[in-house]
Image 1 (cartoon, one colour):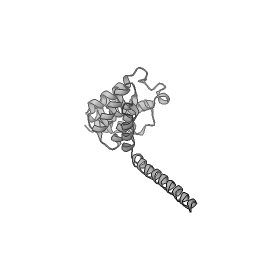
Image 2 (cartoon, rainbow, N blue to C red; image 1 turned 30 degrees about the horizontal axis):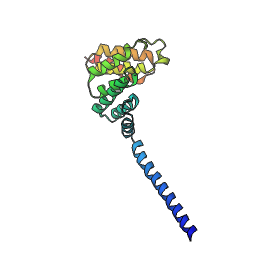
Image 3 (tube, rainbow, N blue to C red; image 1 turned 90 degrees about the vertical axis):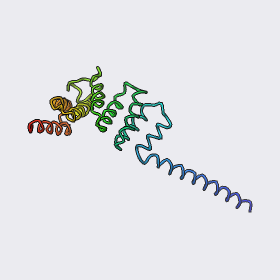
Length: 181
């Protein structure tokens, strides 16, 4: 009888432990199911770090929640001002919010870094993301009606990455628009 009672207690403890683990796993899966909830949790746990703010800002960009994205990306830059990722993502957020002058300023800051080549010499393999920066800058210029500057940026993008389809498409769009006027 005493041995049956011990087995019952052991089984109860195991069931309680398993139940706690199931509940904890379920709650953790709720956090991991979407980028915003995952990175909001990371920001809550590490509010003074740039990476969680950058990633949360990017997740908000994907959700087109641009004001929230801008806040977190600016926070990331506050903690790590030399880091290019949040600067680029901030440009995307401003661009999404149609704040083109602010987006242009972020993209230009990336291109003004002395360690980043402006020409295509070697940057195709070293810094291919610059093609995206030039393309996005061209999109902003086009949105503002600055077609000549947009053409130059799309061409810069294609010099870095000749296979960049977005830049090629955007260049063709601007040239068509210019020719129809």
